[in-house]
Length: 114
Length: 115
Image (cartoon, rainbow over all chains, first blue to last red; front, side):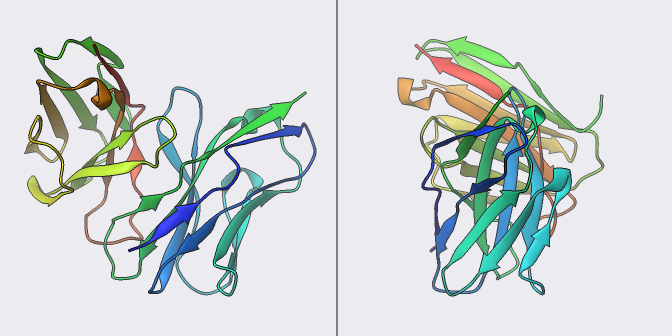
């Protein structure tokens, strides 16, 4: 079984500052990793995913994440945030058996301060 | 309408009521999902349907009853719910089930409050 830990439930950041949202996972098998974003009053939207290959993954809206197997982490970063990035961000993991069962973290609420 | 739509967006019901949540996808997908999103808890997968057949039921209480009449529609029938069932219920769809690289597209959710 897998689990996901998002240590920060809330992250306030000034506009145009960089941000890192942390995600750690545990699993006894190889995994696939995902970041989803949920804007207010909307469903979840896929930001980026790591399936294999390069450990640095680029996603939409200028976000990127780096898979670190030794530290079992998949932190999300953006060099300069905008007001429109205010949302809840969810990290998710799946085993690599090729099914769609995602295990989600509890989410990190990113608030951008003007 | 585009993407995944859900109705109603908000629902308040008593413990003895019977109600249904509706989800419709306009993406031509073959798989549909129900998730439960509770405050301070991880998102929980409840049911998965592939080509209108239920392929996953994650130990969900029988007071939740899903129905998938065709690949575009998914319902969640509710009866004799408990206050702890209050949550945001999200519907999602994907090209096909059984493949993790199939992106799931989510609807905006139904905010359910059980009194």
